[in-house]
Length: 277
Image (cartoon, rainbow, N blue to C red; front, side):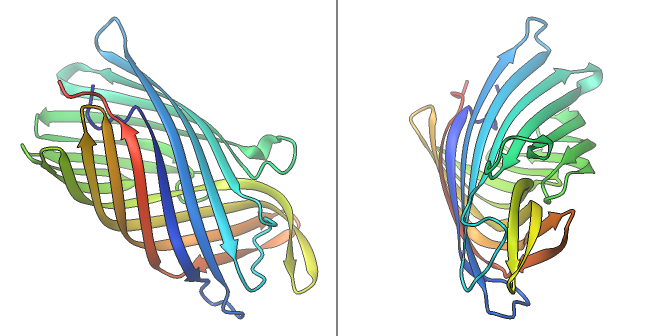
């Protein structure tokens, strides 16, 4: 099984207080992200196909000041997802990756409805040229940048005996160098989703109905991990975050875009990884 696959884990990311750009009231916002996940891989009898059943729970907490209203009324953003991934070996060193990811993304402040559900998916082909080089591409339907959209994908992997450079656009670019149990590197990573809110937003004593909130961000910075024993991996990263946006949407609401100033982020995590062969 690939050493890139993490079987289970928890991550905590904090974004210290940063200013809302173009704010008339010098408003600021502080965010925390919590992520739990579980992946269960199984190789089929044909020896060419691996199925991975994955489960995820994500929580985003937002704290604003100076009467900043995002239609949330101190509620949190929840994301509950299931992912079925199939990796199948084809002829001539090609492989196919197909992933379906139905998701609930909501504040859960009302009964479930259609807008609580999202459906993400990826279809990608990869060519393995050697043990050290592979490339590929495909199409994805993702909410990485807040609004679900069809996005072309690009995959590129360059390896050596003690390093790896990996590109998976539009989500991530990473470089890692291995020092025994220690791995150090750098990452550029995008993440986001659209959440069903169903609330009202206050704007100078006028209340307008907000249906949804689209949230996205990009992080850049160094990464560090340490393998404890054969299965436990401790992770830490930090750096800067940019491209942070929160957009309010609604049928009776004209919408508002909150661009957050660039700032720092810190992440800590722990995961279970497959033992090395």
